[in-house]
Image 1: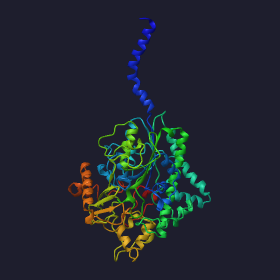
Image 2 (image 1 turned 60 degrees about the horizontal axis):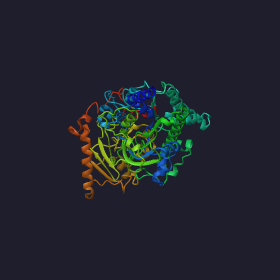
Image 3 (image 1 turned 90 degrees about the vertical axis):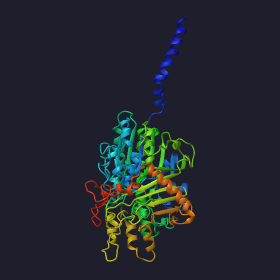
Image 4 (image 1 turned 120 degrees about the vertical axis):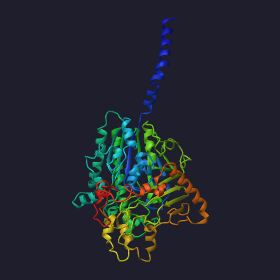
Length: 566
């Protein structure tokens, strides 16, 4: 055998060993782990101008202004049927971070008095352990102790540049009153948030993939009355004739909603700032971008703390690395599905305990509409929000199943007030003033955030024109609520007792209860005893529930910096 032939055979032999040895590394090099940039807004539901374009005009999204978010949606996947598992800050975030239904997160299943169980796997810490550079700005998990525990407490906080964005309308209004031009005032606040993200990127070790959570609280109440028009030029009367049935189409409510949309405009502008910083870093192409919020509008009927669509349906946009974009999908998605999605992106095994399902089969598809035929429903629920919403410190337990055509809500204790006791509203009681109801959540109906809409509704509750409406949105509810979404998208007519819907009701209740039993929901055991006694019910030590909106039913409010944690 000559030298050249021998050399050729040795090369072939070496290749046979080297390909298996280095083939995986080569594949890993091709599939570099993506960065994850998660934009998550407090109290932001399905309100973005992209929805007016996708779903048709004529509703309140006609008035929302989110050009930066719309731009990302158009190059990514826009989910029309994304829902939170629970429309209350802490339980929603507990379920999202753990990838589990909220009732599986121990004391993370409630708002006030929540305590994080560190034995529960949380996707940020799992990604950290797998080599990701993790960080966050502002709110991740709360109220509860330890603060932001599922994200490593405050060890990974990047907030030194400032957090005035969290009180956007208050700070900008004050700066303008002192003579600063409006645009300069806005830019000053955006710059703080952007610098925090810049600091996070600068702290990265080498080319580690990163996972960053951006969670400002400005969309949460309180905000400055009139800010929608004053800071953003949003005319409240442009909402006239566009309000859903549960929102009174009156000047007070239209202005309140326009002001809410003003804070959403600020949120959108800040998203744009961080996206510019991402592009500047050179990491945009390899970054998975996710945008969402933790439930529907605060202090409005049917919103936050309700299992109606206005309370649980949220914006969800996913774009960037590995995603086949330019699509609108109708799959029903729960936010706990994000945890396994992020873990799969990072090459981390998904724990069996997670009930959420990775979205990658949907994200890699090129289809629109319904992509995964198993994603045709979601399960939602709630337990305790404000601890003294009811005088006996009891929760308001609900579970619901929602499909394309129907939603069935089960109210386990219909004798209780769903949004809290009507403190001071009975005959002969000392009624809270309109200012008190506007400023302090706890003075009455404490599971509904304070604000002008709530105060207006309380003030007109006994008038012939609005009495029935007030009782509808704040009054006690039957054990079963069933809505035909094809003909009643605003969920106004309960057909649970209509014989024509008996089979639909039975089928949905079976599917709901089967899933609750399969996943070990304590609400179905001993009449929910787990949730009905301390520490899941009853009064709390304020040190455990710090971050609330007041000390008692008629106590003095603590202002937005505290209330924003609810």
